[in-house]
Image 1 (cartoon, helix red, strand yellow):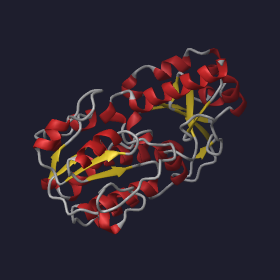
Image 2 (cartoon, rainbow, N blue to C red):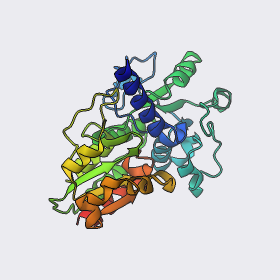
Image 3 (tube, helix red, strand yellow):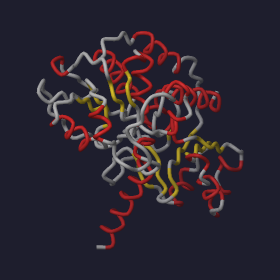
Image 4 (cartoon, rainbow, N blue to C red):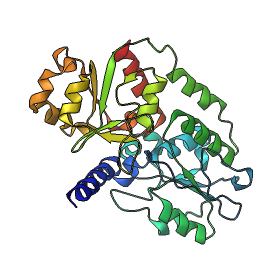
Length: 309
């Protein structure tokens, strides 16, 4: 019974970390294996990794429920984006200041606001906006589910959204390619810590892990499989971190909430090689855990290349 309660606590904490900042701030990260999505012309609900031809709609009015999909649509065809989520990333971006917000804080998207806009298409995140999208679908509004858990899914999603609004994604895809240019060769063994309660680190089945792989970073937890419901992250003990003794550590500290200071206060921390050599780096949640926006992805790639170059 104790083991079961402990496992439930870990899963709950992971969910809070990935989605707790606010639904719209963390909805891009979907690291577990998605439930298979049935696709048909009647459902208008598609998986970005393999969009069927008959599920694509020629949308002129798009509501985006994720910051990344809003960013992609705006870059492809700004006049077709009619509403956005209440993400702090978008609030800080002048491009989106005049667009209505259909969600805010921890509240689900406002169905009345969405319906009133009479959209041709509403885009949400798999596993997070399912209920909202299903209700919209019942009302005859086309929906698309996206899931960004790898670089390949980012490309597939961009192509899908471009096709949905009849736009050419080539310039945007070329921009993505530049993020992976001039990758330095590094033998440094790195550890990424995305949470401190519990201590979580990404393996290869997450956006974080896949991005590190694309940037040729030696992620020491890349091949470790966890036992939680979300297979993209594993829990680590202090003993395991000491045993692995990473040469560099990237700590995700959303909005400087003090996560790094919490780690620094632990007795084992000063014994690590990364700490002794001052190779500990604080990262924002966006870009490294949640793609968030294209600019955040670019910023994160550049900083990682600078650190390991």
